[in-house]
Image (cartoon, rainbow, N blue to C red; front, side):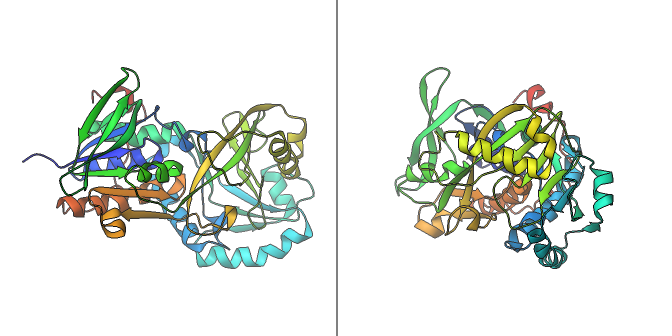
Length: 388
């Protein structure tokens, strides 16, 4: 008996994690991506392994998702994670007013935290603002974005998944009833159009999810919300440094390799394929970052870049929840064969894939439980050594 074939559009975090889960549950999987792995948002994240602390006060659902998945990723893919922890620091009296609410919310979301006196925080991180008033130690971490994606993709390939990068989806194929049963793709290297058939197509394109569903005449409540990040050429801290206050622009400084990354801003964009990096936002990252770590003011920028978050729901910018949604378009639009997953965070990629794969398996008649919580991922190098 042949395996049901599932096409996954998008080889970012969600797409590769979904391919991994689908392959483990017995599906034949083909991933199509218009660029290379992490071509879009996933290749431009700052690499924060969220503890959930950032969302504990205002978005508890996202906070709980983050702390739960944080602990799972530490177990299944430790080779790409730096489990360095994080600090939420207060540097003004207004920050202190947020502390009581922060403590209570973290406890509600089962996020471990430890309050530190100013001298204790400065002993851990001597380069933070010496005017620090209090600090909380939380289980943030950092990850290498490309290697995280490669670990999921490499394990998926080892289990039979096929990856067709530089294949751009140009439309859907349909059966006699108008339901989706494949995609039309442009092989950008050969400049040739191909048709690929499948029982189910998964739209895992993040901020581009609305453009893909639009090809089927459907809408998706995805609001691309870009943000600017600036990397500086010195690693001033060993932990993620967060401002102890309501989430705002430039309130995180993250260590990555020999650098620190300051992020991020939040604004609306019409064209997700062209988002300019402005001098005004770059300067804002310098001001906000140096408020947390004064040495940043004299550091040199190593890179200035942006990423578009795929937020779902009403509102705009930071008022939109960071949780994820999975849509079976048979239920939402009476169009079978198409499933869309979007929203979420890099930290929740495995959970997003589990939810998506549950829906796909129900559609193709597979009754197998998810095992990705307990399955260690192979080396990220497996992606390049696997024959698929």
